[in-house]
Image (cartoon, rainbow, N blue to C red; front, top):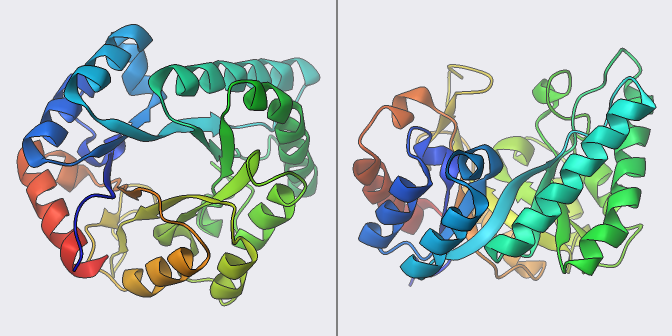
Length: 270
């Protein structure tokens, strides 16, 4: 029987809530895990966030996000690497061992060079992250995000980079919204065995209302979430399952109501 012991609130699902509200909401709903976003942490500070998490007895599944490596100049790429190092430090301080990497878009039309910048950025970040016990989770995003958010758009690309390192250094994050369409998905999940660092769930609504803000609650769309979850678990992943939904309509609802529905949908559809 499905339980909620692995359920994690990815903080962006309650986008209007601050850290304190998200923590209190999780406690009230008996949700044991939370995934934090850096801009939300910045609002109240790292120390206060850590205190709230610890006092509530929550576990942090991941920190979002690092990455955004490609840039037009060496100086800007170094600036972004430095920011990723700060993200590593923040993740360690908050008690998670996973930093999610959204790799970033190309600064120009040369997408191949941008992908190389991603690989180089990760290569430079790995030794620093290892010192802090932080694993880097490469999250491929749907191809529609390639121009604005992430030039790594398939599990195959993420696996190819991750395989350059030990599983305790670099792995992949499987987000059903971004990968459900991929004809090679289940082969690539098997390929990622032992290095899956996160599993994110939501749904793909038809018709799709918005490219960024159009994710649905599990069960409202076309993704066979359970099938993907089964494949991920067969590949060795038994960690927290994050509900990550970008949707203004959901954000505008009372957060406690969203969490209640999230739990119900998780039990039925995940």
